[in-house]
Picture (cartoon, rainbow, N blue to C red):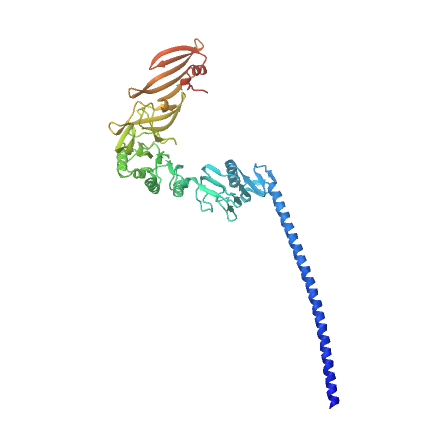
Length: 505
């Protein structure tokens, strides 16, 4: 028994010694493994740090490269400067050129389609007239970076992303650009357009919808257009904006077609007929009555706000473009407030001058404005009737309606000269000049005397072939004051610099 116990004890002691040895070996191996792991961790951290440093160096290199590329620039053969991958735009002229290149499908430089390139704006621009980049057939598919600037102009919404400034394709990218549609925000802008077909009528209505507050000058060049919807849109526009000083809607009808000489017949459809409603119920009846009595059609109409006064000019004419109809003048309707007094409805008739023949509406310059015409310290109404010209020179055409404070009404002022070159109301005069052939020139000053315009001073320059010399005559109030020989209009002007308005060239 003792022997067995000893054997077991010895075996247990041996096992303990074996386990102790194994445990020690494991501890040593574990410690070695931990040291190896720590070395590998330090190696990994060193590799990560090295990679981070290399990445920073790469980013710095990339930034430097980008800086170098951005600083580099060159001019293309088409006149654009390219810098940093963008073609730079500094002026309205360049923007217009870009629009032309996109429209014509041209390249901005060899191998680069203008419609697909990248552009950057370097200044805010204001474009004149109607303007857009790209068309439905050739849309813009490039990048346009406004760089925080704006482009202002008259842009028609066309379904594109930028409301008509740029007609975009699916690949276009427009960013950092402020688009200011001048027509949409300012009633001081105008829509000036002529229509001679139903397609152009629809285009006009699109413009009117796009720019609900703008002023309108419309020229209709056909007799049988459907204009009821256009008339309705203009009426709504006038009702909304007609109280603004200087606001107007101007319409001119120019008969057209093979049968343009055909006489007017009651009941025939005419494009301008619906527009009488624009003036309102009371004035509309006056217009319709005039059309019936003068046996013509509504040829011209303008309704305008002047201070607190609403003014409507209209003219009835025949079907021939040059016919005045049976009337002997045109009409002006007035209502509102003037010089602190309330003006009830006034209807004045302005007789045609000897040279006039349906002149109203023939040019964009027609309007009515406030001026002190008779120099009594009160504002009157000056009617601009456009221009006329001949072999003796060119003139602006005017008529005058003066304010009579004593009666609280306006009246036609027939003594005001209808053809003039210069209005100088600040000097209480107007000036005209002309010539006859190569041997006669005159300059005439007109001012108010006893309430009427008369010739106050005049110069006549006449060439005598017999004497081979020029003679200059100076008149005051129609009486000859002085006559003398001169070398020509230059010397005449130097002798009377206040009347130096000779026709030259």
